[in-house]
Image (cartoon, rainbow, N blue to C red):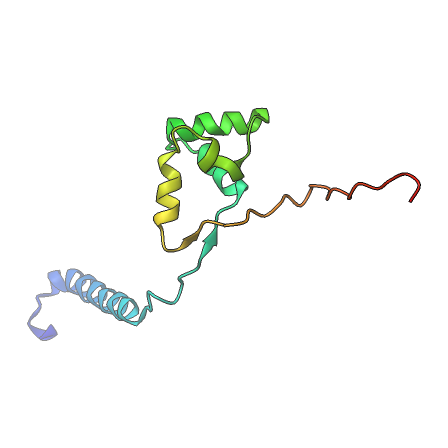
Length: 122
C-alpha cells in the first residue's frame, strides 16, 4: 500500500501511521489496566476535615465550624453534635464507600494522656 502513496505525501502518511501505532499501544495499556486494584479506604481525621475546610470549595457551614474549632470552642470530633446545621461535606464523606467515618476518633499525638487522680499520701 505504501508504494501507492505519492512522494510528496509520504511524510504525512508516516506521521499518520506513527499516530495509529501510538493509539493502538495506548488502547492496549488501557485494556490491561485493572481499575479495582487501587481501592483504598481512607479514615477521616481532624487534619482531613481541617484541610477540607480550608479549601475554596468548602461550604459556608464547614468554614464556620472550622473557625469555631480554631477558636477552641469545639472540636472536629464533635462536628455531628455541635454543628448546626451539619455541613454537607459530613454526609458526603459518610456516604462514600472509600471513606471510613470513625466511631472512636483518634487522639492527637501531641496530647498528653491524663494521669488518674492520686491522693497525696499514696
